[in-house]
Image (cartoon, rainbow over the protein chains, first blue to last red):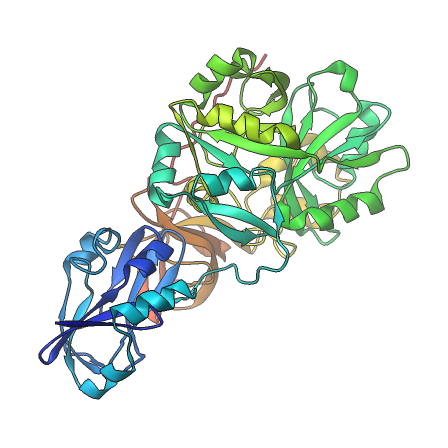
Length: 123
Length: 387
């Protein structure tokens, strides 16, 4: 399974036609303790760059954008009661949602893990 | 991912407090705040720091705040000079006593809120020690300079740092390091040495907890902070937790909950208007402020408890049960001790009663909320019976 990253610090893990989306470890560290998550409804159609979810730390609210277009196929509903999972395991148990990928061509514009690490060095 | 409500942006030539190096060594994340690079959090994070302060003792660097003295020939002269700019009773302020007050505009708005201390040392009489907000100190100092009489001088104390030690175990720490300070009651002050370092110590704070605010020479600040941090009950706490602690305590943040467009009566700060001053007036905006205290205000600062988990941030619109716009949130977020979202804001007077149902519009969705009494977390100040 290939994992891709965006410059806005979302990650996408692709398994066949399904993409799992979350925020990177860097993103959670910048955000701080997450206290609230708002997830989209299943079936919602998201275009690349649409607001897919909202995540709030003690300090601020942030939007999570859809890294690619697709239809929401599943959400990590457990996050609502345990938002701290996003801090504990952002690239694992702290995933946000699963999309049915609309256009695999959109993955081309994203970074792989090596490129993302290099990108973080520039920040 | 994008930050939608990150307040601080530009970072042009920030000032540093005398503890900036220490913050960095402690792993703080530094952010611009009121022109200073300040620690927003240390590696443990805001939630842990917040809870530590509620359970033990947190050490805050608040050296960005403005410290200054008003120095006149005697207490009455200096007190009268300050009374010309504030609604507080300073002629009646006893030795070693502290009072919270406001610089008011001629229109009855709030230029700043501040703490005023009269030294416990009779030899220092004629001097009042002021602590003002970092973001307002240039305005406050200009206001003082323009309005003080010729025999009262403004002396800035830019060579001093300010630390706050806050939490239920702050007094136990102080009892070991400076027993005299551990004895004083809420809103009183003494001068005493901590580990051989001369300090001006106040029993006051901005968290709702018992605690102390300690003014110290800038070049001794790191030694003092290091000494305090060596105590097992003490951990460094950043501005992030300072904000969630003060919001739970129902305390106003200048520029958010109060400003030049809000009056003390609207802000529910009537306690800051001395009894004698209510009778005599004679402070900027007295006509409006005293009129509002007597006859009521069109809008009032209240506590707001949203149902559910979603925080309602500053700027959130408040509607009544009928859907009419009745106010706006001025501070809002997550209260770790309160265990959920909390907010303060202004609502029209007919919606200010405890229990009034409100609707908050957050990202286009309607959240149910209600008016609740402040503070969200009870104050635990160390009050000594009146002597």
